Every structure is written in C-alpha cells, then in structure tokens.
Length: 230
Image (tube, rainbow, N blue to C red; front, side):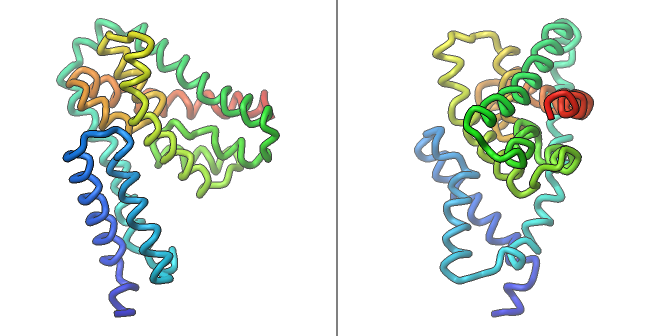
C-alpha cells in the first residue's frame, strides 16, 4: 500500500477521479458554485488529511498533471483561430480591454492589500492572480512572492470568476459576446474560460485570446509597476 502511495499514479488517479466526480455533479445540478475544480478540492483535501498522506506524496502525481497546464493553455488557441476575423476586426478595443484589465488587477491587489494592512509578501504573491498558473508562478518568483500562496490565489480567482461572470454580465447588462469573453479571460484565466465556452463559441475564443495577451502584457507591465509601487 505504501509503495502505491509513493507512486505518481496515486496523485494522478486521485486528481482525475475527484475531478470527474466534480464534473458529474456540475452537469447534474448546473449550479455555478459547484465548479468541478472546487468539488475536486473538497474531495482531495479531506482524503489527504484523514489518511495523513503527505502533500509531497500527492504531488508526485499532481505535478505531472500541472506539467500539462502549459500545453492545455496553448490548445485554447484553436477556438481563437476559428474566430480570427473577429480579432482582426476588433483588434484595438480587444487590446485596450486587456490592458485595462491587467492594470486593474495589479493595482487593485496593491490598493486592497495596503488598505487591509496585509503583509507585503502576501500583496506581492497576489499580483499575478489573474494569470494562468505557469505564468503566474514565474512572475511570483520575480516579484519575490510566495509561490504556494500565488497558486492558491490563482485558483480562488479562477473559481470566483467562473461562478460570478454570468451574474456580473447580467447585472451590468453586458451583452456583447466579445466583451464577455475578453473580460472572462483577462480577469480569471483558464477556469473562467471554460465557463465562457459554455456561454458561446465567440465568448470562449475571445477568453482564450485574453489569457495569452494578458500573460504577455503582464510580463512587461508587472516589473515596471513593481519598481514604481514597491
């Protein structure tokens, strides 16, 4: 049994099974709060705690799954390719929207963190929270953040965005499909993009685009703002 736990297969199987359960629950009830990733976390964490399984043991397989986050993000370019004409037609407002989104994300973290009196390391760790995990991890290292906290922030941001995005669009009467997609991808990366895909093909394509553009822009913008703000 111990040998099986020490195998990467344990972490991989536990993650996949937990996610499938979460996905089936979401499909059955169609309630945004029942996000498959959130359900998977609720399943995995108690199992690790109850059986006193070290996180390092789980990570042997979990890290292998994380390795595919990068390629999975690249695959989001497929729906974008199908809607390339929309990108060419609305290039300026799309780029402008992503820039504003990136600046809002970074500056709001700093402002809220300082108002709440948070430790500087926590503020720095939250700066790349709206980016996809591989990019967020590297930027967190650059700004002297705490990588595990950054990962948690990224997860919370993604799940929150996926849950709230449809309601926010409805409250503020945002009906433009391109705007919905750009906002989703810029604010809450790939997790919210999966929600955007459910909204429609255009929303999903634009959200996938926003993830890549926001990542590239943040790589250049964040170091500059870091020097200015810290």
